[in-house]
Image (tube, rainbow, N blue to C red; front, side, top):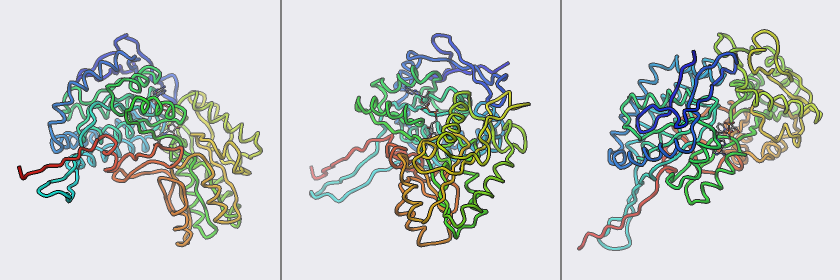
Length: 485
Ligand code: NAD
């Protein structure tokens, strides 16, 4: 029997007002229903906003240090459960258990980091041009904020949005992705058990078209932080900013790795596989284009193709599996259609290129990890986000050509270069149009204490994670205090 989950509204675990539910299916074995969740509508979001509004004054008054203590306690609770939570994440999203557990432990780090940040939501003091004047700023919370999150990092993303909002004194309505809401439940529940007051954090599951739309349009929600596709994010941004509320969108990527002729080729292949294929390529920071200097292109490609062909694909709960399934039928169809587009455009699938079938593969949404040769810069597979284990290699004549191609996309989230040349490294760091810049490492992976976000079409500009994330969820009050009577 699948476990039944509830919304969290005003500290109570409740069903949708309509009583409707939806099923959460294991993408590795579609005969398993992992959870049954409230299929909420606009009325449930309104109830959550009521609860968040009611909780705001007390939460704001509580002060940062007391708020931080709750986060530290939640970190301990979640850490003790990491193995089980990681396994649940795998069962609903498909990534391997080490990846699911790793994401859970990263969420523990987020709780610890923002537990400390709660003591550092500070303003500044300034010299005043007037006598006897104390001139300073304070950062104040916005009120009720809304969070809309995707399925691919189903516990870390809700956490990295909710925690800076909470430590700054806001109250929150969270709408997790319908494909993976159990992970969010575990995060929210750890905070509840740690003593978070009722109504401070509310979670409402259900479709984007109803739950997400109410968060976007309700005037009582003063800011919306969204991560997801460009198609959804762009419309949402217009809606939210159109009613004069703040909106932050983290969206897609088309992330390049540049491999120069002097590179350690083994390391280049290792980093490209880690960025492109692990987590089934379902990361906004996934590597999807490799720009390799011609002198080493054949050696690099042969090694990459050999290693990718040898990768074990299967149920992420099985030990030894390196690549889990795509998250659902629609995502699988999307990946397969891009593979067909690539072939039709004249690229060649040197590894993979098909759906996996037979045995356990018939139970889930499995696709072969795929390496395209013969990709050119203007092909759709070189320009559009695929969000699957698919990477293309483009041989280049020079570093300059690699940089030109690297920047010739609408996205600018993450990038990497593999080289030992210090001068080229700095030219790349200065010239690459990306918010996350790696050297001799994979394009994915981010530490919690530093800003995260992209250039160009990948992001609306304000950064998540690190202490800057708090800025989005606060407003600055400037105080002129004259003390000479
Ligand atoms: P999606 O846009 O389909 O959905 C994201 C969220 O928005 C879900 O909770 C969904 O229910 C909700 N939603 C859908 N329609 C809505 C509407 N009309 N109004 C309000 N909310 C609505 O994205 P997805 O398929 O869940 O996630 C994959 C995408 O997320 C990829 O493009 C990926 O690159 C991106 N992503 C970006 C980052 C980043 O930080 N840049 C991180 C992870 C994922």
